[in-house]
Every structure is written in C-alpha cells, then in structure tokens.
Length: 283
Image (cartoon, rainbow, N blue to C red):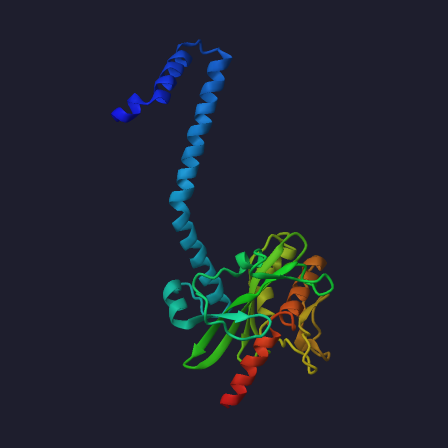
C-alpha cells in the first residue's frame, strides 16, 4: 500500500474502526450492519465501474442494432449481411428541417440523436393538443432520414416515425419508394405492446402487408391506415388500407394515428413534396 495512504488521517481512523468491528462477536448488530454496508459499497463501486467500462460497447451495440433495423426496412438485410459495410455503402443519412422540408447541412448527421433532441426544449417543438394525434407531446425540429440511392437517384426514403399505442410509444421506420407515396416496408424497433396482440407490429407477416400500399389520397391528404379486420381488396380505397391487429384496437389506432401525423404537414409532407418535385425535375 502506498505510503501516502498509510499516512492519511482518515485511513488511520478507518483502521481503528475496522479492527474494532472485526473484534466484535459475529452476533453483534453493529458488526452485521457494518459488513452489510461495506458489501453494498463494494457492489455499488463494482456496478459503477462496469457501467463506465461497458458504455462504449453498449453504444456500439446500439448503433449496430439501429443500422440493422434501417437495412431491414430498406430490404437490404440478409442473414450473412455485413451490417456496417452494407450501411456505409448503401445508406445515406441526412438531416431535414421538419417545418420547411429542407436538408440541414450545418450539423453533424453522425452524432445527431433525434429521440434525445425531442426531449430537449431547445431542440424540439411542443405539439398543440388538437394536432397531437400521435400523442407524443413534442417533436424534434430536425429529423434524421435515410436514403437508399443508385448513383444520384433515390431508390428508397426511410423516415423515422413514433406514436403512442396501448402501453408504450412505438418507435419505427417506414420505407417509401422515390415517389414518396408507395410504401415498401415498415418496422417498429422499439415497442412494449402486448405480446401476441399489439406486439404483432413486429410480425414479418403483418409487416409484409404494407408493401405496395399508398400513403396519400388523390387530394394529397394522408389516407394510409389500419382497418378493423381484413382489407377487402375489391373495394375502393383498399390501396390505403392495412389489416388491423386482431384484439389490439388501441394499438391499431395508434399505428394509424402516427402514420397520419408523420405523413401529414406537421411531419414529413413538406420534405416528401420537395423530394418528389426534385425527382420530377430530373425526368
């Protein structure tokens, strides 16, 4: 033990107290409490050390999982996919001003955390109750979107969406074709809905029902949503409808509401309109 520690006044006092405690009978209440407190302190230090030491690994795992979910909703994830490589080569992350729909170039897209920003009053906007159909209370001013490109041409537009279901806020991504209208896939990567009921939002079979559906009606309003039961493909408007989740009406309503909100003027409609016009100008 270093001499500096040995000479420390507090260490000397600790030694005296330690020797006193160890000399007590094992049935002593003071000894029991002292040992219990010592064990608690040791465990607290151990847990704190582990949390700090493992934080970089936890961050890397979180980033990897997010990339995996984005590749999945983009239809680019296979069993043997090198996630980091595939993401770097095929996905372009961009920051978008929600209000204007313009790209934001003066911020670091790699370090921007939209979920964290939504909880920061300086980086978010409180949503008026009459417009908060997704029940999220606030949204980040800047959104992080992802593009799949072939050269300069956009193949997929991947947008973050969130909204309240029955028990939890569902966080996910919706992938649209370059027309900003046709759904390719949807994926909820964070939710705590009832397993077997609302939790079916992660069921691959249900997710597959979204492929090819349309977001906007002929009037330009968001029309995509879930219906009670099974969609009748022979009826007009079926292109905007997805089968509801059996026994999970509130989760189904929550999914419909979050889609309507984020695809509307309060969400990504201004951005999608600009992407669509840019594509038309290229043609």
